[in-house]
Length: 251
Length: 272
Image 1 (tube, each protein chain N blue to C red):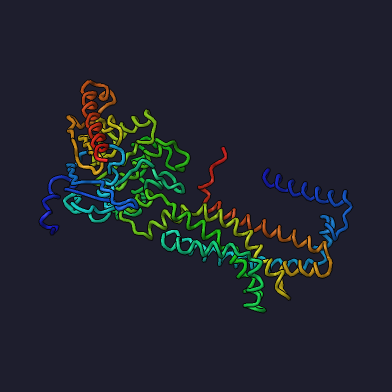
Image 2: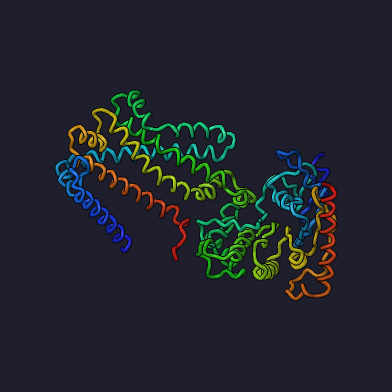
């Protein structure tokens, strides 16, 4: 209860500070919209916010889910085989080093008109790297003694994976997933903003820009932040359920 | 060499390490660790293996557990040649390697999930609880490993090594990381466990006092590549008290062993 209160209070203080900043400097809303400008913007486009918010959310989640599947798969391959790890690492690092903003137009051209596919693809590409790396590190740094404990009893590789390697990697996996959630949102929005006739919050942001509706642009940012927070806490909740043991009790 | 002609090697003693040599292939060239090593442990015997650091003691445990195969020679358990891991072995290391996501009870029950057993779920849990009680961990069954002290974790690790009633217990410096008082406590626990359900054991240790307190026989390995340099049969193998360590007799035994370790280390330095 106290936690919720502290968090809400922090948000309220932040909004007050923001409002005061705009008010004191007497900034016009094309320079910086103030929180009090946002609500009307939300209200005017409430239907669009709901449908586009949902678009952005599901595209991000699907991209993220694919990133989890592919990332875990790559992580397992690199975690178990040293040769493949050495071979794949430079490729993955290079791929990750390419700014995704430059990939967006390429993908948009490649699958022209297929907004859903494009957006999901970018969200996936931007977010799978940390997952693959964390899983591979988690698996490859498994102390040999842990394996020996089961191996000396005649356990199979599969049993060792399920009983030891997988659970031991979960905390690293969730750590990476928290990073991946935010990255996936960035990916989704990159595509939504660039792709013409797009949908989703990114497209709404873009239309705010073309119509010089600055409060709308800021309202989109806030909506994105809210979605980001929501998804982040879903991951935190899953982490508590599946890897809660890794958390040291506070007292 | 046909296995049948060698089957004599497996007769009699429960653990037989017969003329084993092994060389590791490392980046800096071959590293011979064991050279024609022969060790026999009778049923319900308990042998301590001591020797200079890095002389290949841990390799011996991995060979007995079937985790690796020797280049030459053979290892036998209960008259059967060891070619792969077998469920009649229990192991404990210096690091207790408890699984952090399981309760202490579930950790101890882990081998029962792997090894074929006739026990039903209730009997398995009873077995684990009984063992935990025996080592003084009653009331800690539902705790996580991170909530326990180092000594308590090592006790739990011992329970896990014994829960499936292995024929052979392999201990690789299990008390090495503990403080002196906790270590002595665990020595007494070992004697209690042995009296309660006898096992055949091999103990790797750096601590000569530990060796003479726990084992029936102390085997001193030479420096790398290791072979048996000296072995000492200890007179009585029954449960001991810590006072035993402070008798003149014990001091003399310790001096003999200390001399042997010195010789082993000098030999190693000379060989380098």
